[in-house]
Length: 144
Image 1 (cartoon, helix red, strand yellow):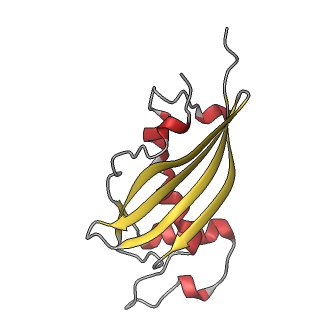
Image 2 (image 1 turned 120 degrees about the horizontal axis):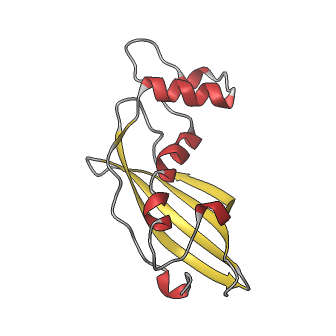
C-alpha cells in the first residue's frame, strides 16, 4: 500500500546530534560561493551558518522516512519540488542539532505521491532553531 493521507502526522525518531563545526560552515559557504562576511567571525566569536545550512541537517532525517516499508517511497523516484525554512535562530559553530521529521500532507495523483514533510531542528538542550518544510514528488512504480 503506498503512502496516503492516513500517514499524515507520522513522526520519526530524532537523528543523532550533528555538531555544527567551523569546517562544515566554511565548506557550505564555499559551495554557495557566498562571500558574505556575516558567516565568518574572528577567532573569539563562533561562526554563524547561512540560513540554508539547515538543509544539510534536515536531509539527514529523510532516511527514516525512505526506509519505512509502509510508505513505498524511493529516493531514486523522488523530486524535491519545494523548500522553505522558518528560522528562529541561525545555527552557530558548536551547536549540537537533532532533526525530527513529520509527514504533514499527502496527496495521491495517479502514480504520483505529493508529500510534504516538516523537519524540526533543535539543539540537544531543547532550543528550537528552525523548521525545514519540503514538498516531494514521488513516482510510484506501476502495479504489475
